[in-house]
Image: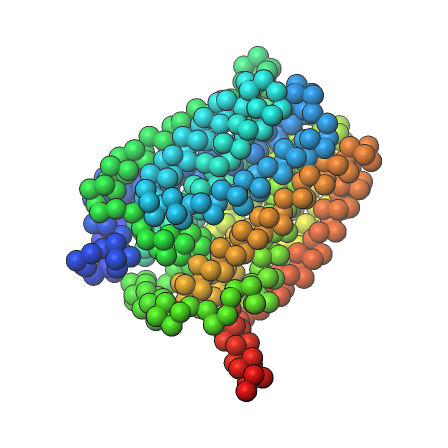
Length: 471
């Protein structure tokens, strides 16, 4: 299958993309060779495998790290808040870096940063060094996370959903594998948590290799993407469904985007859109739940008497639910005019899971792991709604930048607050109540964000109403 994919993609790209004297100006992908596309596919899969192990491997060994470094519950809460903070802070750098150096070069550097951070942090010699090395790895994750959809759009413009599904599956696989394997590997290699965490640097180092020839190919093929292409590509993740006439749709989207750019984009700033704010809030709350789960769920099970190795496997089960649902949810959402009901179903699963953790964390551990895994699939739903709540590529780019950056900022306090409540209450009752309470506004905002409207139309209506009022 992997051998066939590049040949199919080359044919599709040639048919859908007319030749242009200046591919960079037209926003078209460069002329490709079969070996280049093979490197892209391998690079995407290996990069996706490394986008979450830095987080879930730490969650599996959080108790050992806390004891080894002398961390309090509050400091551990700070540690679990670092991922969304880094994603918000460093993710905004990705488009400018890609414009200057090319997306492949930035992803290659991102994989190197992940490898270096994961190799350094277990042996940094204290909490400040551990946090700094974690931030280095998370910086690499942040820019790579943004630019992987750009790579998909650039090299596979008519197979966006298929390739997005491929690397989304790899991302979920890496997430669950790190959660399940870290504790057993640590035990097998002598029981030191430093070894268990440092092992994942080897996987990240392997992910650097397929990107090296792509950096060279970028130089010979004619440079990197423009900033508009980068920002547009970065938000198509999971938001496109396959159709019979992919080439015509791609050409129509480019023409529609050109008209929107000529008209100056949105009628008003994106911050004037209620839909944009609802989507940003939904994105932030689902991210809050995801990072609380990755950082704290193994500890909840361990405190309930579940063995450490089993707690890691339970987190892996939760993360693995994203493998099939990353394919299913965007396609179901794309066929509905209103995605609010999906947000209700996913939020209800979260409420059931948190109720189970409160009432019978050990007895029903496997059930709660599964239903919380379903709830965490609000992430592909949020990305799908980003693509559906804007009518043009320019609008999607602005909506995505606003929703994701604002959402990640909103998600920062959640894991920290869980750590504070855990330390000062001496148990998990209050933290779990907080988690469940956050599901209610998430459901409400999902209903608002899922309504069948676009930010362009919404802002045009507001602009028209304002003009009439002024007249």
